[in-house]
Length: 67
Image (cartoon, rainbow, N blue to C red; front, side, top):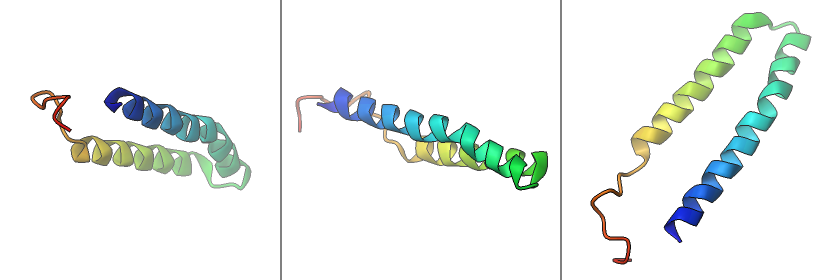
């Protein structure tokens, strides 16, 4: 069950973030925000990723059956 939850989260995030990124980038350029806005968007996504990695807990030493 542990791996299916992690897989579901990874797959949904790739669809939402990866699928919407070209649409968001096109909208930013179409409305005249320029390449600086694209850079800020990418920086924002990187910050969200870094925070998610920091918050995630390590499960290497935990017993899988001890739930």
